[in-house]
Length: 112
Image 1: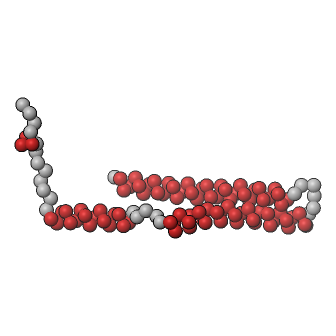
Image 2 (image 1 turned 180 degrees about the vertical axis):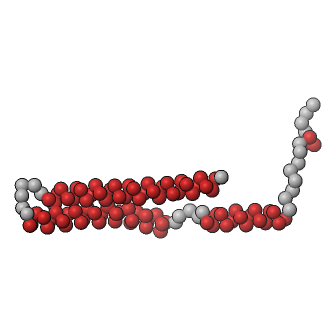
Image 3 (image 1 turned 135 degrees about the vertical axis):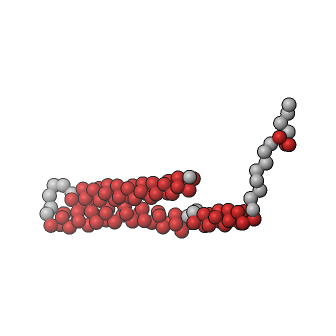
């Protein structure tokens, strides 16, 4: 006994309305979930860069002011520059991790 094409159950053919509805739903989903373009990537890099640069520059500026106001054996500028850099890196890491989680959750919702 062989299973030929005549023994396979055939799927019911969807109606024209169902086909059109399915194609429209896929098109809307593709438009909604469009891949981010080049400008989005550049904007993301700029946002991450500024989230690191601003705390670093603020720490350095505060350090220069403290060094002029209260001179001592340790450099306030160097210490606050490093602290500002660390805060900026943590801030950028937190923001990127949150965006990554949001993108993964969105993909998982689309797969279901």
